[in-house]
Image (cartoon, rainbow, N blue to C red; front, side, top):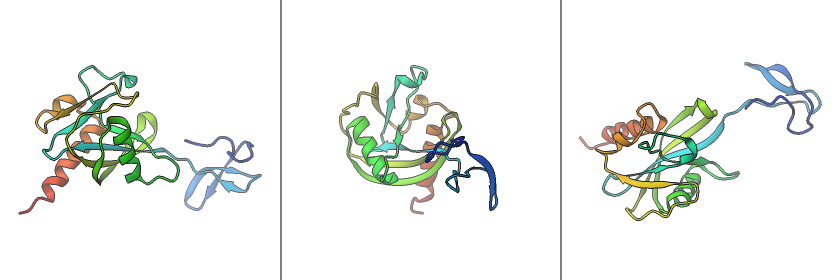
Length: 171
């Protein structure tokens, strides 16, 4: 997001070079820069003790009917990434996180979002879906590839998770 107007006083921002950063929105009235930003959110692979993955459907995104996505959501003010992951997993599918581990970050240009990617360990259980989730299913690690879009952040996070899992395996 780029600020055309100052969020404090409402005046139109000018552009100004601030150190090494060029053409930064700047409010002459408030005497401060308003650096552009992307919306921050989390995305997580939810995995049970048997390496089954919980994938969800949210029809709001108009994905093909056979494509599933991951639990994801925005960070609340004052919340850490890990707290957001635990909250979103519980809110969206009703499962309690046993462990949360950071994997990688991803930029989603379609919505100007920077997504912190995690793996969340849970105990296998029945889903309790929120109103924003239309369906959820458990997939084995062999079946998950056929349920996700190959060119998606979901696929990137799954691949990064598999890579880190193999890399950290005992020799």
